[in-house]
Length: 223
Length: 357
Ligand SMILES: [Zn+2]
Image (cartoon, rainbow over all chains, first blue to last red; front, side):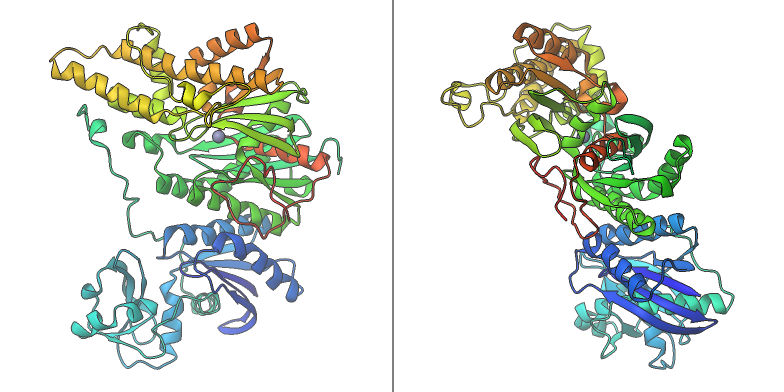
């Protein structure tokens, strides 16, 4: 099955995978090096991936549903939803932190671990996983101090290594710059599907309200 | 494809309306709009994050509804057009991401077009090709501009614009001050009919000689607008009544505020037309529905010998049909499509009618 994976929870990222059961071959992948160019680069990258693979359309689309900064996240979701609609192919959501968890499992952790990425405003998006990569708890958004005292994977851990060390959580070397990648996201999705697990809908995991405040004058107070 | 009457699908997401419209040349086939307006009511104005979330939810259903209502298949479309700016950046990105994906998956050419020029382009759907010596007055919650339209597809100039709040924004803020709810335009317009527009003399922004100058030596803001001082003046006025323990004459304030807005907009628009050889004026934007603006503009245009054209209300507010209409004009004029590599431009100038490839 030809699978297009998209994740824009951090940098814009896309991958074209050929899957046979749990087996995954990467036909091509793209990751932007810039943080805020999602709307600009994602579509041309997907077009190039398909052209290079000589494919007109994939058989399914999977997309990272966050958590992640909202504006970039929506670019991936709007793209995936529209592509799947036009191509008339299956569409699945995957929690974006699962992509890093898949890479973490490859290091053979002995127990539970945490995946954390930057949530801005001095907070982290994070989730706790079992040693085999199954989600145990989350995702959440909070200060670093609220993470469990576990080995922590992901760029969010790199940002707050001292504060995490203070609560007994350690930053796993080699993972302190890790962002969710479409290759890992797609691989994780393919394995879940092969194992008969359900994937998510494409409902974004914002984890935060819009922050809009009702002005005093709207609450019935004049001036 | 028929170059003279191409089938174009237009996408709009620059503010709180998710619009998908389809036109064939100058014929409107469908104008599907989903609005998140209700979600902004309790805040008294458009909240960009709420608008962006709503665009993401609404896009595919709106697209599907538009295609079904028009009885059009994506395969039949000749080109796609999308608003790339100006507008709210996060909101624009949802429509642009969707439009790019639509173009990618269908293989159709994509035009990234200017929202303000699309407000002018929509005129072709109501009465066909636009006349020469054309100008446009655009008034909405997001913009207030006077444009000179030498050619819809390659020469549009900005003659004047607001230097602070948009007129519709001033209506919303004043409605909030007066406890009238959101959106402010319709409620103030209705209430103004019961009040005396001469009761209070509110300031007309940027009308002092130092800003206006003369036709020969125009001042820096001859054709520009400013509404933030007016909003402050209304707040002061309400405050005065409250301090004195008197009842606030809401209808008189609404009428006097509306008169100040409409007087300055129409007099500046007509002057700009006269000084730039504009004989035909098109009114666009959501505030085009305002009864006093329409009446005073019609009267002042008539006495200046200017022909006024006002498209139907649903084409004046933000919508996808206006984007499609301008897109069709660009296709017919042989303009090269933009392709997939562009960025949104929240401050896109009117001179950029469509982004270059
Ligand atoms: Zn508009």
